[in-house]
Image 1: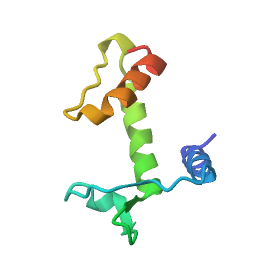
Image 2: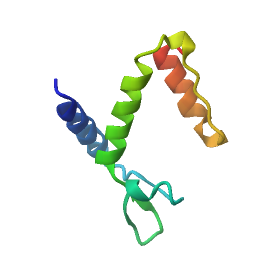
Image 3: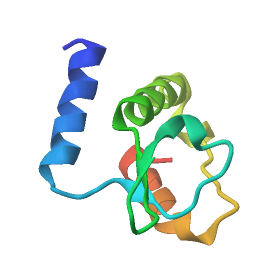
Image 4: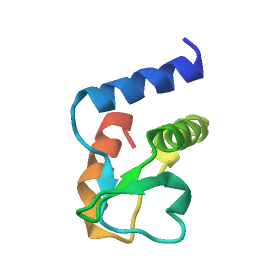
Length: 91
């Protein structure tokens, strides 16, 4: 399966959930990833760019042994996502 097809399939799955993918925080580093803002102040995330970046990161991480990969974040809110990542990737 081609990378574009995989990204397209992932995007369809995300959109099929009916959830709006967005954040109420906007920084200058996030500008390329934001498509627009809702009236409630929710900044909508561009799934095409985001999924492409995730795919690139996954390829990079895949070049290393799982025991040599460390995930960390300076934000406490990411803890659950990091734990899930570590569980799924055996890191």
